[in-house]
Length: 109
Image: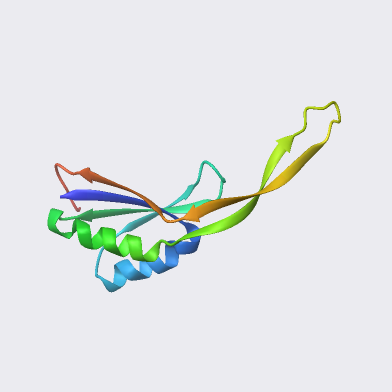
């Protein structure tokens, strides 16, 4: 048995959650926050048998699209101007970060 931990952007949460339900895959959903952009994320925890890991990974891959987003990157100008400004910067967001961990035991009470 494996534990699949998938971290996706909040924009992809509904699509992925629906895809899991349609495929009859039980998942626990947790709210989380990204470190780089400080945007909302959703973390899915999925306990799955070894032979279904590829199926779960395929669903995650299909539902978590990468896209470009322009964000304001704050930069302080160190020129004795005491001016703080921000520069637009294009970053790639979306997709999924996925961890697959071995599980020794699983219990449902």
